[in-house]
Length: 560
Image (cartoon, rainbow, N blue to C red):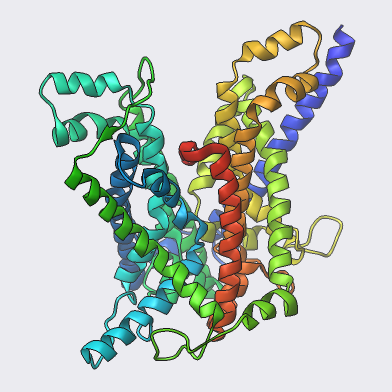
């Protein structure tokens, strides 16, 4: 019997070691390298001069302050929208409720880069709205709707409020109705009950959503750059790193990247500590029966949601019009329509689409190979280091893509052992960085499903002679495949949209769709950029449709 068990133990130990080797090599080592560069000079000697220079520079300090302010503002705006939408959908019945619950996911299929371009086409200085205002009202100068910090906040809010909504939905669905009933019996009704009982009980989900919104906004550099905002930390990191002439600026780009990582870690630890102060668990979970709204309240709710999703559709409309239109200059809408731009980006230059599928598909495969065993270790074993795995998964979600991209440049821009080739000169680095960025979605989706399957079912199979592999194939997998599929598809959706990390690592011939959109736009080929944007929206929408069919609104747990 012992001889039979040793190989199994050996295989399990080898798998566990390989997972940790991947995590150490492709997550902890790059982050360690970026901190090493931030705390050393050109000669490799330890110094604090780099950080002293940062904190003595008024421009960088203003960029830090404005980045924090923007992140907090985005959390506030997405909180108002996300909480209102989640509460309406889960607590009340009104016309179109099911449709609006699907539309909640709409902005997620809109990649950030595509979204900001869509807003520029509609709300920019020469966009549809300004042309209509100038022609209709005789305005001499266009209204500045989006260029500046207010535009960045608008784009981030529209794109990110679904993360808040999904996180709140997940928490609201788990609140024991008896707690709200008890509050009502003691006289807490309406808004008082919501503020004193319901909202505090959603704290774990709310903090999860708020963290994602804050860190995403804090680390986004493409949206500010398109809208003419450079005095933020993430754009400064990008601009400093992308020039290789001034070594001082290059070093400051590394310092800013290290600060982005440190601040993200601090925010995550502070949030987890805040959640741990109180107990948010209930003895039981019951289905909450939705209440009917009054006639006026019902149509106010519908009007609010229609207005919200009309704003959300603006960037999609702008991108589609730019993709099929010709002669769209100082006119409200294009003068002519054509599919020529789709032919150019899909038939004449198919590399963007082919590379996106190839690299995102490889990243998905890596996420499944690494993420599902990680979820199994965290949910089913007491292996040493499983808590560290859990913490590292949360850390990955918090680390800005900008910092990861820069960390990979510094860590892997040296020849590999026994070869003269650096990893940064090999295209495999793109699937690797995508897998690292999106691994948490696969891990969380698989982990959540494993928690639902009681271990006794697997123990029963083992008692009748089934090995671990057969138990997993015949018992566990049929029960958890939905969670694995949902987590994997979310990893794919986010990978195919990724720009912040891959833009630093892309070489000629490796370009994915987001990189193509950015370079087309910078080069003035806006219609080609829009055509690629429409293709990306369709790909994300198809993936998200499958996710929604499989999991519905339960995907909120993926973001926690």
